[in-house]
Image 1 (cartoon, each protein chain N blue to C red):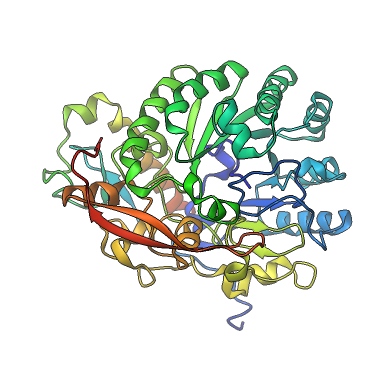
Image 2: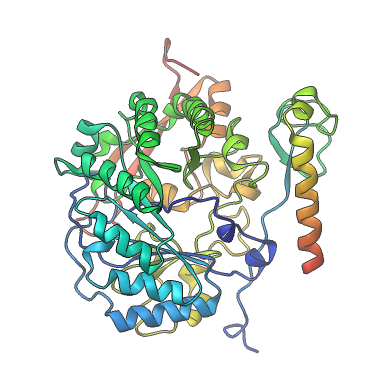
Length: 70
Length: 402
């Protein structure tokens, strides 16, 4: 198959998650949030009470399902 | 030229597979450039039909080809789409090929009978452009009475049972009117409200006084956040257009986390724009001169999609073509300079977008702001661009910083 015949291929968007402290996006795996300087994995009251934990769980499930499909 | 309605439709949401396989999930199709309005911000300078617009048979063949490529939604636009006599045939053809069909309109002279006929043909949603309260809207749209007609169309959609959304161009003077406008469109039956910044293209370059200055995002974004909350409580979902961004403190309200975050411009990777004469582009709004990828009459869409360079720029794109502030931004790898149309039209080159809330806030931390100044007019052609200079300056003493 020549390059011209190859199916189109694109890069997926890098994965971001919300900092559990300041609720701004950070790259997955980030420990110290570049926005607020705190531990982005430590759950703040704002994050918990805003329902973000449940949404984060759903996102994890979505990503796992997608990965499985590939 | 308008952005599509109800952007949160599940079928339009991109999966990992869509991104990697470059499925053209969403197509915006200008089916004619003829228009019954005279908008002073119109990027395509719509008015008269193009010299060689596709015939009905050619359009139906386009529909077939797009369905084969995996397209899930086609939004028909103009000019004014319903000015074309066979528009209902095209709506029906799109639905018959298993794709969703929506339409964007100025609403002027779109009768209730026509809305009923479109619904019967399978139209799933109608986006109506309303750019402010009556005096501002009628001035921007260039036709007296166009505001009341647009509201009448919303009311008719409610009666007919067709999902209606409103698209609003954010211009320099509309901000103080947005709260009142929201009340009016809720009352008229709108379910979605898509806002987007007016872009420096076509007629908007001729009337550059209507363009928002980048630093005004410090006022706009908190306002949109407030409207998002107030509208949501009353059943109106505020949706950001592709040039409302990026990664500022309010993005999580309208883009995530349940709906994902801004993942970069989808032009040419998961979106297609098609001009009425058969010119294919990665996005309907991009400058034809730089982004036109050939004529669908001469080359099958699949072939253009697979190999034409004008459609490739977002696929596997890194940060190499970013410049200015965007090049060094924390989000560069994800955002890639935001909306290509906005940046490219303004500065003649993609990859550096001053209309970014994150950027505006970062500059403000240093006491700086950016404004645009026109240095070159746009030719009298559809999707023509001029040239603007970007001026970085100290924030004037006393300037309001939200």
